[in-house]
Amino acid sequence: MLQQFLPYLAAVLVEQVQVLEDEVLIVARPRDGTAVPCPGCGTPTRRVHSRYRRRLADAALGGRPVVIDLCVRRLFCDTARCARRTFVEQVAGLTVRYGRRTAALAEIVQVLALALAGRAGARLAVVLRACPAEPMTR
Ligand SMILES: [Zn+2]
Image (cartoon, rainbow, N blue to C red; front, side):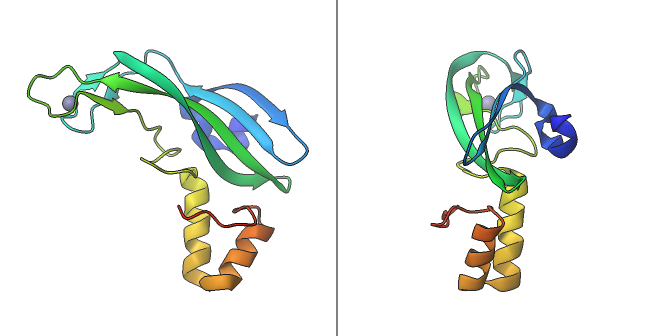
């Protein structure tokens, strides 16, 4: 049911959803065993170097900001001619490199910025729970 509201979660395994007083917390991870193409050479790999958690802000649900706690993998690239030894997997439609927002929320914030710019856009983003009271820089 959650994936009907948030279709970009289809690529991950949702482990837990908590409706807290001030946010909706979704704990998820990419599906284990999925081969990911190296961004340097394109060779698919699934050999895991390490894992870490990313916290991504997402569009609000029911007036509450949504936070996705996503456990991502750092993977090895074993191709000898590739300059990358490791890289962090990105989830299509959900994450971008160094991004702290989901792709969906980043698009909302970008549209607000282009349409309204400056303080008006920032105020509306706060009302829509697209940004905390102090707007993020990414
Ligand atoms: Zn590579």
